Image (cartoon, rainbow, N blue to C red):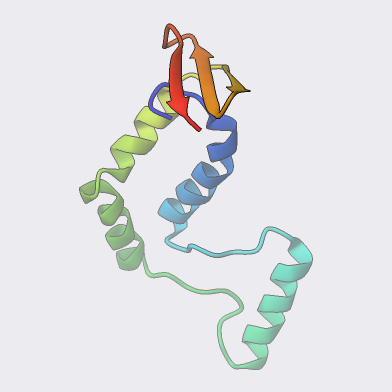
Length: 108
């Protein structure tokens, strides 16, 4: 990850984290039908259709991102270009070759 390999596998998580940071909500279904079910259930229970997070709560949540270094990590991650990576398997070993290494070997 530090040199950009595997970004396509992490990008969905990054979108989740970015949305969570912005709205201070860590779970929200993506499918409209499921969201409608949750709204109906919450309304039937006398709750607001969706969770309401106060401005202060959002600010506190975002402060956690700042003090833990997550904001900086996200910034650096987004600025790191994806690097193609090629792996091959040979006799119990994984051989890694990409642009940032001259070829290294890892026990598999």
